[in-house]
Image (cartoon, rainbow, N blue to C red; front, side, top):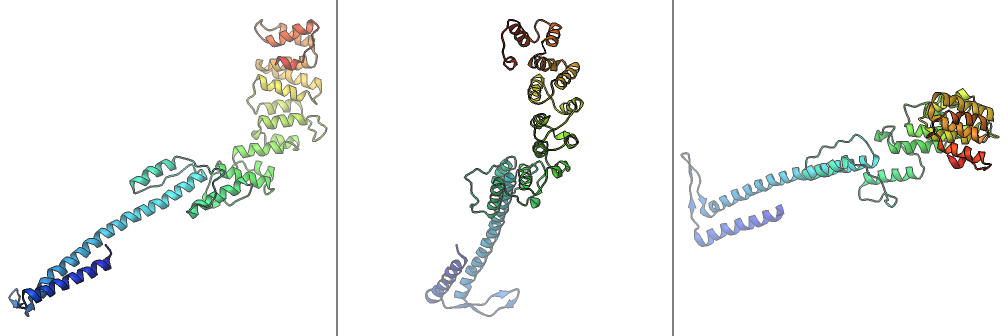
Length: 338
């Protein structure tokens, strides 16, 4: 009930009751004796309206009290709503550490779900919601996806955050950061970004620089380095010992070493290639397959036969099959057997 309407209705009711008593019941007066003090006479019609006035005041106090309680509850929901918006923003930002304390049960449930979730802005989601905070974050994410550089400092995101990585990548692609400046500051940038930048870096870098940042070596970067050995452009001169040092940075299996031998077959001098895999196979039996592949690929049949003859019947059956076909005068590409 609106306060003005309630007050107007109460006033009219009190006046009507007082008028009715005065006009139709009695026009007399009554003197009240209060603690031995005789008060002036007051019209009975007025005395009748006093309890109504007291009731009106009491009802006002009652409504004010519950209105105040409702205001407190409403304020709790408003504050929780703002916290929930903040939790949505943090979920879009992909923050790992999130903790929002809610005072209302409904928002406690929703907040707990959001605080343990990451949200991804879909391709069709545009920054035109009814909330400015969410619009700002959606616009920021949209700019990042479009290759723009944005200001993320105020959001206190760590270096492993996906948005931070995208932003630093955009800076790198836009020329705001050099590859070496990123590789030189490993504590500032994520491992994934440094590995990605290292792939570009090794395309033209000299060996000493490649070796300097070798902790960022990946298989992709390794094969780029291998392709540069004795190549016509961006030639890279590298010794077997230096190659072995690079290989030690990665967890490579037998198939990887065969792939390495294939890559080196394009430009590496055959003698260097043979010596490389001979040295590698002496330290690991897993690399013997790659050594056999190298020997057969270079038509070094005699040393390949000697190596196969020193293996058990169940080992390297694919290479033994290739040797048998070779002895029968059948020429097949060794790549078909690995």
